[in-house]
Image (cartoon, rainbow over all chains, first blue to last red; front, side, top):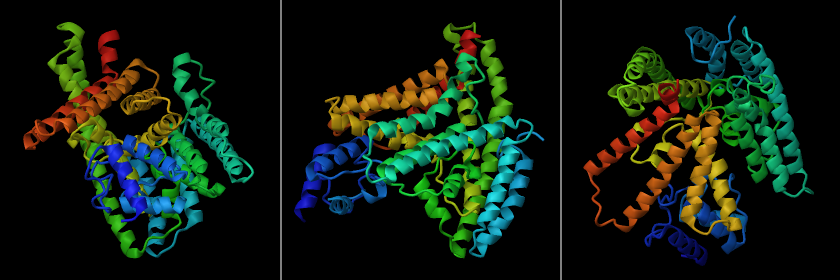
Length: 79
Length: 406
């Protein structure tokens, strides 16, 4: 797993307080109730700070940010 | 001729069927007759707004022109690359877009009929759509809008009076694309099912609870009001459940019609209800009840507010921040429903329920091993949520106002 994904997983772990988040990079983070609105915003803000990107809140389409792999793709796009 | 409220009478359904036929035949043969859809929209809108009370229609026209001015000015501002994405111009646009709705809402309070020049059926829902467009123009999710596209989206007649609240980019995907015959036949089938279910919901169950039962329990509850403090009685409890059932079947029935008619026009308008009375907690409930409204509030108020507070580090504690967010969101929702004490209390009640629920979920997370979780606890959770929700609807109904103060 690359460095970017590891960083994303560690952000997710910090925000949710769950140790096993991201063990499956295709796990749906919204469907399983891992991320609620509040946690989502926290992840987005942290991603902004860590990667120096601008994440638009309403362009934020849940289906495009629903797994670790997808988040990583979006970060790459926005970098 | 009277103004006909959408989906309220057999006549409306007859007009609708006749007007929809050419659209449906067109779609079956892979064509969208844009000009015809425009004419059909004009006819339906004139039936709804230009009956005996044509003031409604005139208000609608002025409202649309006003929103158009606001949205297109803002779009023009955002498209000019020399402009920064100014927070103040964005805020100004949002404020302007909601001014007509605010006037309509405070009008009953100050009893000055001249300020709510813009009052017409469905103004709330058109305002939700307008504000959504401004927000998405700001974020760059909407980069281009033609006047005709704006009008088609805002005036989409199946959802004009009470939603569901669609979003412009999603709506565009549907109307710019013609479904394959196979897909369209699927939409016709699912639309027909929804239409039938909607008829049962609104005209059988909604009628039973709202028109037959509700007046009876209302009289009964009022007759017992001196028997116990606060007028509490079994009849009041019955009122609470009957009203809740009426509210659900009436509104879910209407929403099913709106989605069904959209489907017939080849548009997948999002659903508004997903078995709300099977929710296991209040958060779950808001993901299943009036979904397009609660998601609108989630995406355009709650998440934005959280984003703002977190970036500016206004509040340190994440828990406090979430709670402030809930309170803001539900207070705005309360005020949106109307400027009466019971709508505001309804908002505060739901905010409190959300805050309590979050606290419980945190507690549960920490004590996962000690707290049992099985079919029985789940049944209890559903039962408890159902009753909390029904109680909130009792507040919402305004019946307590009648019971206590009139």
